[in-house]
Picture 1 (tube, rainbow, N blue to C red):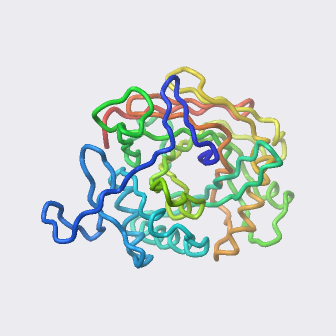
Picture 2 (cartoon, rainbow, N blue to C red):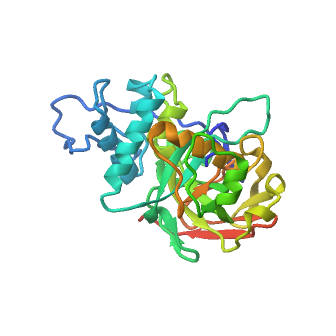
Picture 3 (cartoon, helix red, strand yellow):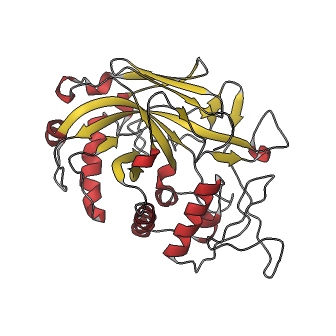
Length: 335
């Protein structure tokens, strides 16, 4: 999952600063922008949302907005602006509605844990969860499409300024576990999790925040929840390990973009302990919102690195100490 506590993302000499996107409001009665059912329009040159939600927007209208910005690959500050104190229960309700909308033509196959990276035990963390659909699992060897990548306006790039927006995603390195037993909370422990894991493997997750702060309102973990913790897609590695044989805290990983190492991490950073702790947390947390982990599902347990940027035509590779490598290539252009 995205190392959301890190506000700077590096890729060689290119730095993407925290994105402060100004949403342009469309005047009532304007005839230059056609209002769609999703109530979202964008400025082509900048690819930012130019039609707003309102503080009175229903959960259904918020879901419409979220799906529209995801489909369009654009960013929005509307939730930060109009719902700065969005409660966690409502955030998960909206996430559920979004999932149900997508399940009409898709199916959930797994879960993701976000905000779980704890490098310094003195710094508290606030994990959240999201879901993964079958259509978002890339096959090894395929050219990864840019569907879901986000158009980053040139005005927010710190260097290599251009008159055009840049299509980007972020690369996360994670440990995945596959379950062969149900794990109903609320008292799941480490032994329960290890017994329920059939396989362990490496996974690249592509993410990018679509819900942003407007520079004044907050951008909280609850805002990330409604955006499904910024998930775009993922690819698994080929190597599989036995959970009972894993040295869970000592695994290391590196991330390369176009053959150059950009970031490194270790499994001991997940929940300040290891990936098993992430699954324990998830199993017990899901019950609060009416879910549970089930046999046949997988969990990606949390991002281990400061995630570098990837763009169309780029390649990414993550390599673990014992879990092997995962490599992907992003297709040229959009779509």
